[in-house]
Length: 314
Image (cartoon, rainbow, N blue to C red; front, side, top):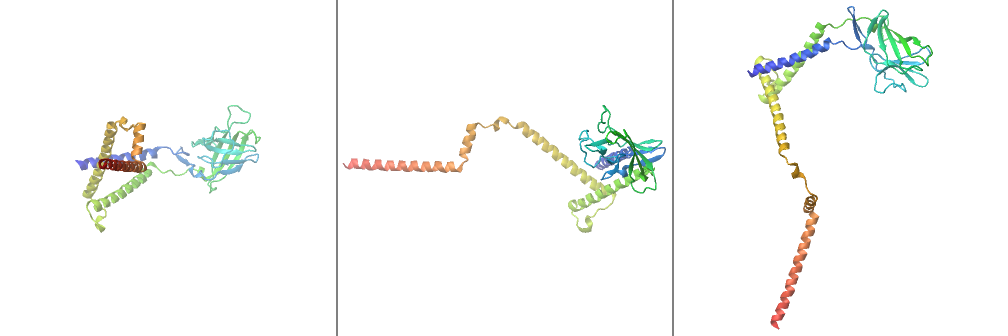
């Protein structure tokens, strides 16, 4: 019965683990897009250093893909806790062209990524910096390629608030996507390897510390009977640890319930007496005073005795 319960618990844990993995595989990854049977992935364009190019007026434009820029922004007019996807370094401040967005769209002109909610536009109320990045598939561009500003509005560089950027790269071309079946197979293989490694480790520990084997005899044996023994051992350890935690919690609860807080409240007089009693110098001083008083009493008794003797003789 215990073996059956242990095996059921193990199968339940494995099913939960596999279920979470399948849910992760089913979710759409950021900066990816499925369109008409094609799969697009722009995650390879993420860079540790921003892509730098020029606006139509010659100002530096810093841009990253699906992540915030690494260039330190300066006086953009946006909160410090937001992720800026791109900025233009103007004469007296930086202008944010939009915040990070990981949702791709397919338009007639190509793969699009829209950035919005950037810096406030000069002289405009409720209008903020934005940009549209058009990714064009170009297999001849082997590297990441380089973005280019093809239009901006207004055209004046100091007043520009909206930008259109074109980016030719082979990463914008449709690629083969790892299917659900292949992803599941990889996930299962990795899971089985992890379980096999855990089995070998626990089996070796069981053979060495429980069965007392040494040398090659302590190595794991992959058999059904041995597997059940190891499972039994692991379940017993788990239950023992759980019982210890519960008993410790119960003891602590009883202690905290039985303690009288008033018994730990000392008066100032009690504390003073306790400190005096614990002071070795004070004890030594008291002993010296007692010895002095004893000597004085002895001397007084001796003098009184001499006077009495003289009186008798007289």
